[in-house]
Image 1 (cartoon, rainbow, N blue to C red):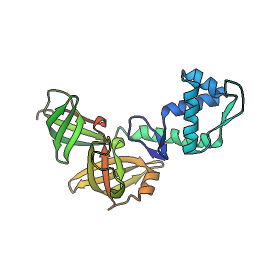
Image 2 (image 1 turned 30 degrees about the horizontal axis):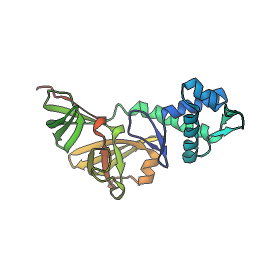
Image 3 (image 1 turned 60 degrees about the horizontal axis):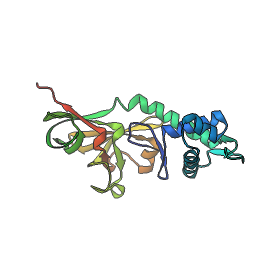
Image 4 (image 1 turned 180 degrees about the horizontal axis):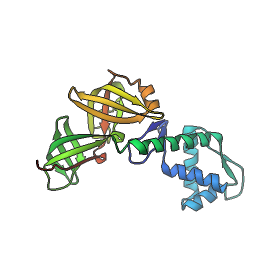
Length: 231
């Protein structure tokens, strides 16, 4: 399972991401004992909730056992697999919350182009697209480690083929593993390092180790720039 580089933790498998909203739905089913009652309690449509349970089950394995019933859909209860998935989600979320905001890469730069709230900033790493306040030219760009996605070069999305507008090639110089998450340090050049927060499973799947070539990408909307204080 992978952690998505968004503000909310997500567990991903086979192209399907289990989100906080999905966790709420499964927890409501567990409490209410009915998919229909769970959807009502959350103010969601039964049809949408039913479809989402099926999508999640196809990706993660059976999550809900349902008995036949009338229009209300009968009774429902979580499977052991669902409880395993929720436990993993909660564990990742707790670890994520403890380290994500504290780990970031900071670069200085200068705004060269603007497009609404987004700007192109020339930094020592190269051009970076970032959310930038108006009326400032010299800025400090902050790249959160949880916003960075790593891929092996052969599997990396091509420029323009993803919403992650920022793309840099580099080499892994350190992997600090926790129980569920790992902080991976990538050298963009010898004097510039970028921090990425990924799951331990991703480290193993991508075979990340010192010397591994990778492509780091991150969205402009997850990258912030602020005016640089005058010295």
